Amino acid sequence: MKKNIVLLVVAALLMPLFVSSLFAQADRKLNVIIIGAHPDDADKVGGTAYKWKLAGFDVMMVSFTNGDAGHQTMKADELAKLRREEARKAGEVIGIKYITLDNHDGQLVPSYENRLQMIKIIREHKADIVVFPRPYDYHPDHRYTGTLVLDAAYMVTVPTVLPEVPFLERNPMFLYMSDGFTIPVSFIADVAIDIDDVIEKKIDMYHQHKSQMYEWLPFNRGLLG
Image (tube, rainbow, N blue to C red; front, side):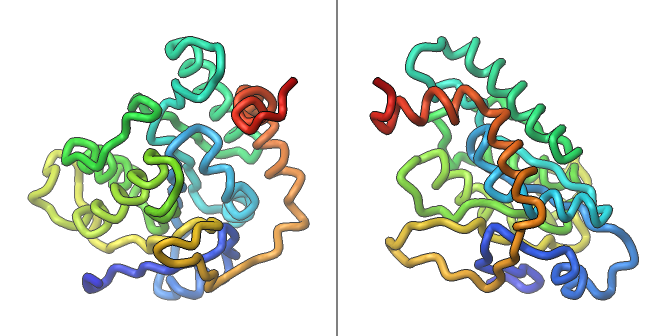
């Protein structure tokens, strides 16, 4: 592990007070970026994101692809536009910015170009905390999003890499989202926090992703007649 990189395996829930204690030297609110592969992926951390927002943190969610392949009937351009709007509305539910990048769904690879894009977005948000998926998943976009964050983790502090975007003088804390995958190693949570008091907000976020929650995912799982 590179010096000053803190990589914790944590649940999708993390209390602001716990994080603040880890940054005891900080006398300011923290910048948090939650990165998923598709619009709706970052919502897994929606409850904690809302608590961070209530604590005064600057929270942003990012979909690294535009989700333009995730539907049984809609064409790519139409779907990408819809999913970007769904993500934006999900962010509005908890009062945060939720952006969608223009990489194609199902085509993400851990290229150098995409690594630079990841470095850029983490730097621009001046991130203190980065939450992202582990690089173990059934979906290549999920795996490669995790890989790209890991590949960017140290490089965000290197001035000569992407010099046109100011480097971070202090490396962010990188935190894994929870998952149920067991190969090559099962997820083990270091921290799990109750979000019962904000669970309705998280559900409301998912409700904004109608093309996924009520159309594509039920179809893909054989639940639609």
